[in-house]
Length: 280
Image (tube, rainbow, N blue to C red; front, side):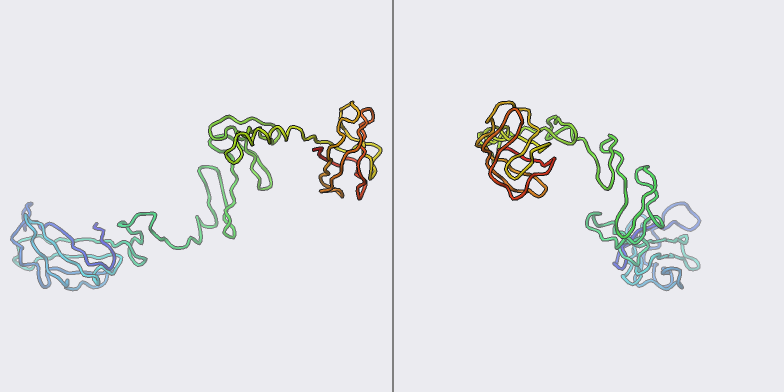
């Protein structure tokens, strides 16, 4: 079998064996004309080739096939001797490539990354039956349904379209953390190490808490703080998170260490039990 590009004139090479011998013959030079060379395309009737054969040397011959002769999936070339000729009949089977009408649409002369293979409308009947041994997967509406079970050989879990992944390293450095919180040390902000140090110090002064018990009014709030010193948070700002007080802030005018109650400037609504806040 010989592979040649579809609808592109190409030269095919072949040997001729001497009649009644096992040796190649050079005596056919100039005789490969007329009905000696016949071409059939896709099983159609044989017709005389456009070009004649040429002896290259040492019993090897060449034949130039035209674009028309190569406009088929399969091309059969017969080199037949007439009565008294001195070579054995030869048959050449040619498959074409590089065109949608060729035997092989894939272009063997073009890099895979540069090839267009058309639109995939179906994979393995109604779906992909196996992906790396992981079982049946389906393709619906252009979306490939797949359950990730491992990453780099480590089992993972997840529900509702969310994959749960444990990050063990960031840029090669081991990362620590629990309950979905990663502990990360920021060494610079905008390339400035001093800015990171100052920001880190400031962040450590922020206190989180929740409203609990009574009183819970527009001017007073019992907290879940453990601090027992009176006036410990005086002069600081309380910022409310979520609920009807989302985004509101007020200045703390008094803190009672025994009762854990804040006094602050009047709010628009009283905080509810469980209202979260920050003290900055």
